[in-house]
Image 1: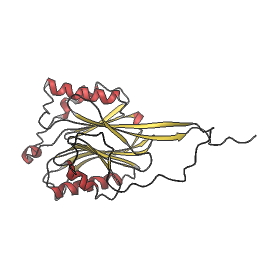
Image 2: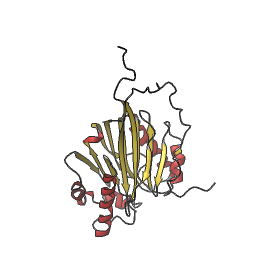
Image 3: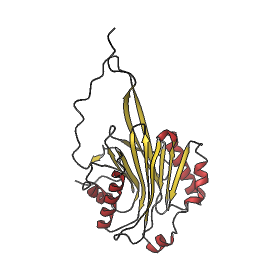
Image 4: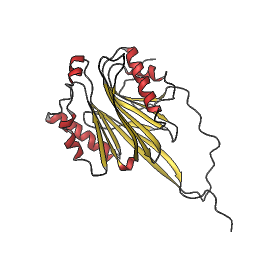
Length: 273
């Protein structure tokens, strides 16, 4: 059958491997049980490769509108990944988006509870409401299959929904085998954090269908969500599957992922008097 357009997210996410069934031994709630749902909201934003002159009023306004929209939607982690050029000379010289020029403006949207990290064409912001930062890794990925180092930001947090790892990356056009190796290495790095919830996302050039095929080969059961060339791979062990949806950000592409965890606030049974 024909592949669906990458920007359509009205269908359920593709499960790349056979999903595990829900635990059958979960104890049913009694009428006395009180529960609350705790949510973890992660947003990813990227722009068109040909529209990343963020010094222009139009493109800057579009990006700031995207940031404002994901904040309004309740994001407590925001990852921004600008597309990478296919020109390795430009890549080598670092002649990419200068994130330092827009960082102050983005920070003006955030209060003192937020922190941030940056690397190459990547910006990652996280709020104290997202949890306590457990570990961080800003990588310049080097390998025999890459002509030049590739930046990635890996943050691991003790979040309300369990240990959460987010990977922010921008992948330029690469040979198919190279892209597959890179995806495997990123998944391995995220799994090494022992996080029960993993989200790998950002700007992925070239074929989304290829990415889907490569996700199916990963050892863990990741799900793939796409919006144009913005891709998110999600894995969950400690909470319910992630709900993912696009936001209208007036130009840049965005996806919002929400994990929910239901926790008991009281004993399931009252002691007999």
